Length: 194
Ligand SMILES: [Fe+2]
Image 1 (spheres, helix red, strand yellow):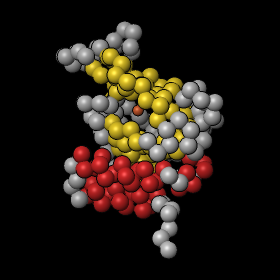
Image 2 (cartoon, protein in one colour):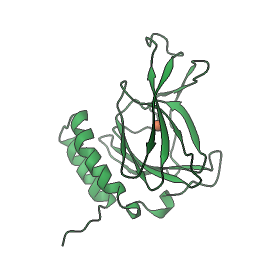
Image 3 (cartoon, helix red, strand yellow):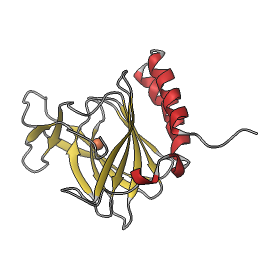
Image 4 (cartoon, helix red, strand yellow):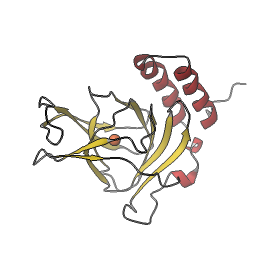
């Protein structure tokens, strides 16, 4: 009998197969999102310790945990948004796929309306608001559709699985101030488990 479980190592093997096989970004989105859909279908595929906010430090109501990182750049993380957690508009500079395990997250997408001639200034326009539900996959397409704001408007934590084409640690990205247009450069330094 075929098992319905889809373990992390099997999920990662399938993703690595795609990436190492030279799949285009489009193919990674098409096929990889079906792998992610399968993976998030079983919340127990993620260790319980990576399904809760850290409870300590500056962002005690948040948690980011690396589940896998490969030499080819593949990064799989678990991101936990506690009740009321919020992160303002930012970009990613790599392709990404996000799936939710249980609960929902409110994701607001923005489009850049300026000509990108200034590094420290951007005009953003709200494009759409998605209530991302379990089983939905949200795609991050570099330069095209990758600026979002995240809000957990519920009263329980939301767990997401993020899959990226590059390690975010040290990757220069941008945060956007909607009121002033100011762009601030930042880079993820570390995750909560490494
Ligand atoms: Fe993000």
